[in-house]
Image (cartoon, rainbow, N blue to C red; front, side, top):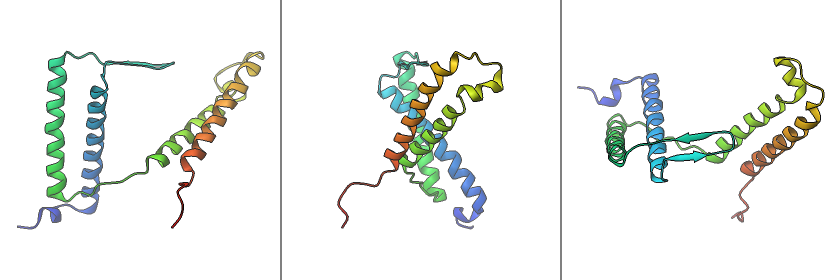
Length: 151
């Protein structure tokens, strides 16, 4: 019989790798959420709540451990590659999207959604510009070269 790795073509391997990687990342996010207390996160414009009794939290963690073990076994069996990503580049990309959205939310663009009160521009646009400028600063900071001495 052929080696298991030979049973998959490249597109199939890529699909399985992406699906399993996504599942693993979600499971690890859940684990981190529960480890941090995992009951409530309060932002300015959002709130997230997870209410689970301790016995269900323990059951969730056991299920996650089992799933991560299964993913590890499949990855080894199929020799699926791990993917290393640059978190700074991901953050910079996210901030770039937010910068664009902020610029597109100025009153001149809000007209797409209906009439804009004239008094709104002085209240909103400067603040959106400051937030957009802050997003650009974060992009630059996350893209900045390491300040460590070069060999």
